[in-house]
Amino acid sequence: MDGNSEQWVEERLAALQPNSDWKPDAARGLARFQQLRDKASHRTRRWGWLAAGAVAAALPLMAFPSTRAFAQRCVSACVDQSNWVRDVFVHNSRRSVNIKPGDRRMAPDFLLDDASGKPVRLSDFRGKVVLLNFWATWCAPCSLEIPWFIEFQNTHRDAGFATLGVSLDEDGWSAVKPYIEKRKVNYQVMIGNDDVAQEYGATSLPTTLIIDKSGRIAATHIGLCSKSEYEADIQAVLKLE
Amino acid sequence: MADEDRPDIETVFQAHYERIARVIARVLRDPSRAEELAVEVFLKWSRHPGAQGENAQAWLYRVAVRAGLDELRRETRRTRREGVTRFLRRSPTPEDIRASKEEQEKVRAVLAAIQPREAELLVLRSHGLSYDELAGALNLNPASIGTFLSRAEQTFRKEYIKRYGRE
Image (cartoon, rainbow over all chains, first blue to last red; front, side):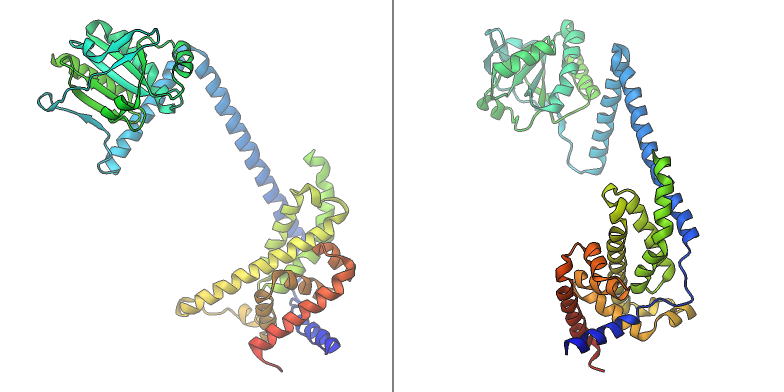
């Protein structure tokens, strides 16, 4: 049966013979081949140029302080936009809450040591507006916000404002000290603990609170917010009293 | 550099294009689609440094027969799906009618149904490749081609009879 089977299959497969009046057109094929090949290489080259252009544009942008500031403003504007999109399209996702003066509750007090070992008590800041930021060195959005807080500290210090940072790094000062020195953080930073984090509901980082002059929580922001949002909150709370 | 190796690629293209297009056309109803696929095979080949040189022909055959059978299986799936919405289909052109020789369609349906490996072997064999060429194209041991081939033939026969009965 094997010999038979082989022949039988061969006879069947012979039906696959293409139509005898069809002949592949090698010249047309070659033209198409070259066209596709050129198109592909152009595409690769174009992407190469685009990437090189982007790098070339980014380098001078980051090289000078003024253009770097411009780039940071662009980033901040992007954050604004994305927050706006989130607010508009995702219901109940607004994670920034402003509280009316009548409804504010007291911020839980805490006593933590700062980098120089000096104890810092929140209630000592009564009479000042406090921006209380829970953060960690490994948290990328936190490090985006820290330069803003440094700026706030500079611009509003004299108007009765203070920024306080509470780091939730598990490695403690060994991680935080080099970080704040490198970033030239100009406000007091403490190492927090689970109790403090829990009292403030700082389950995700960054969590930032604005505390008014009488020590009550005026606004909470969970997650990355825009610089302008913070700025507006600070101005509003400063103006109120 | 691209300009230096271009004439070489063109020579290979000229030398093999017709055969490669014909291998693909064995399994496809539409010869112009076969030519398109053949060009794509050469495009892949030109970007594949390992496929250049003396094993170009074997590589081209392997990729071509695979491309053809893949397209055949896609076509088969499509036709099966369209069976449900047959009333939406365009009416067959004279070309379709002429091309759809019944026996050819049966053989192709069987090839689309059996193991790709075995279908590749049968298509290339029916294209007239020798045992050595088959072994080269499909990365098989030349000594066992005979065994593979007769196993593939058995499979084909069984599937054919299962579908269309004994003649």
